[in-house]
Amino acid sequence: MIDIKTIKEDDILILNVVGDVDASSSIELDTALKAAIESKEGKILVDCANLNYISSAGLGVFMSYIQDIKANNIKLVICGLSEKVYNVFEILGLHQLLTIKSTTVDAKAYLNEV
Amino acid sequence: MKYKRKVPCTKEQLKEIRGFVNDSLGQHGLSDVDISAMVLAIDEVCANLIIHSHHCNPKEHIEIIINVGIREGVEFRIVDEGVGFDINQYEEPTIDDLIKSKRKGGIGLILVKKIMDDIDFIKIQNKNTCRLFKKINIS
Image (tube, rainbow over all chains, first blue to last red; front, side):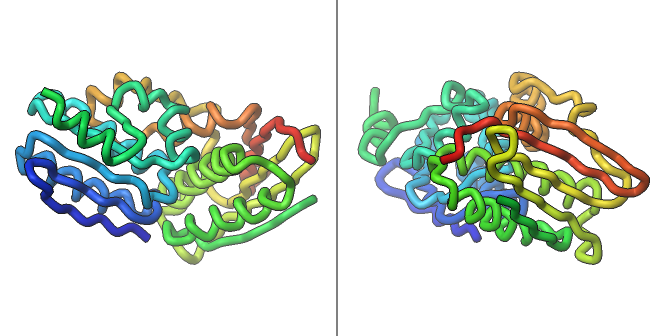
C-alpha cells in the first residue's frame, strides 16, 4: 500500500513516497521520516508526486516532527502534492505550518537557498 | 440513490471502504476534490471505529450506507454494534497542542467536522449509527 525509498542526492536526503498513507500504513512514513530526521542531514525533501492518498494518520506523522525539525535546524520541504492531497493539508491549515512546493525543482531551489 | 457495504473490522479494509465511497460518489458528477474530501471523512470515522471501538477484530463488522441526493446533499450512515462512539462528545485538541505534545493522533475527527455539515449519533439498544451529512449539489 505504501512504498518509501530514501536516496541521497548531493546534500539533500530525498524520500519518495508512493501509494496511500492511511491508518494501516502511516507507521512506515513515521519510520522513514524519523530515520531521516535522526540522520542529522540538514536538507530533507519529501517527494509526494506518487502519493495517492493521505489521511489524518499521515498528517499526524508530519505534525509530530515539526518541533524536531525546528530544534535541529533542518530544512524540510514537501513537494508534488496532487490537488486532492494538498486539499487535506489545507483543511487543517498545515500548508501554513509546513513548507510545501509544487515541484521537485522548486523544492530543491528552496533547500539550496542561502 | 442508495449504496451499502458491510466490512470486517480490520485496518486493511480501509482501502476497500475508500474505494466503495469513491465509486459510489463518482457516479453523480461531483468534483474529484469534493469526492476525496468525503472519502477522507468516512475513512477517518471508520478507522476510528475499527481501531478504538472494535480493536481490529475481524469477527466484528461495520456497515456503511450512502444515500446520494437526499436533502440536497449526501447522507452517510456508519452502523456498528457495541459500546459506540459519539463523535459530538469528543473534545478535539487544537493543532497547536498536538504539535507541542508531538502526538500523532487526534486530528481525524477535526477533519471530519470540517468536511461534513451535520453529524449526529444515535444509539438504539446495541446498535450505533453515526450519521454524517454533506450539503452539495448533485447533478
